[in-house]
Length: 114
Image 1: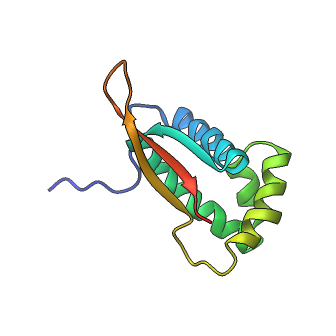
Image 2: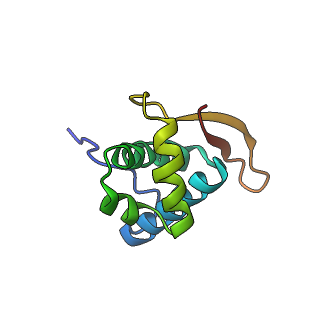
């Protein structure tokens, strides 16, 4: 029986996938919403929840390695960690916004809950 342990590959190499999610998490922190494909949004949600939990626990080395940029780090540790201080999980919500014109892929908006 084949079991799928770990995360989805999304037809990308490991380094490309890691940098793509790092850039997507930085954009999500700065803009508080992001439109991407459904598969990427579902994977991004997993990584972003652990990033918020690390920021809440003051584990700054893992937070720094998870995002790009000093402004995003400051906003994540000072603003978002305080906003989600009382919340245990479920920091993001996924909203389907339609289909992409070129290849008819389902697009999903991932945004932070209030």
